[in-house]
Image (cartoon, rainbow, N blue to C red):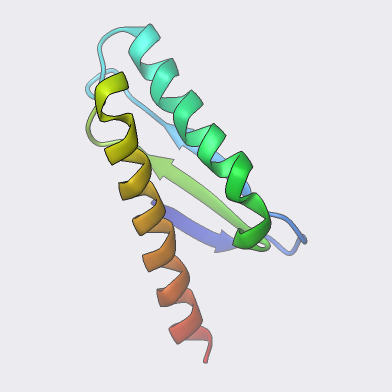
Length: 87
């Protein structure tokens, strides 16, 4: 995941899910939909930052909860790093 301030009052997200992660477009699109939905629900807390999420491993419907938990942890870790670097 990458982040950079965007100068706006809301966050934006970009997604990268390559063919090496998931061969079928259906699986890649599912991963992107899950990340976008999490982002939509949590966008207000993220502030004016552009995020680029790069998937490294694929997940299926059964692992969705684990993937969302990992994504939340990554965003929280990134927020802590940004807060400590701006202090």
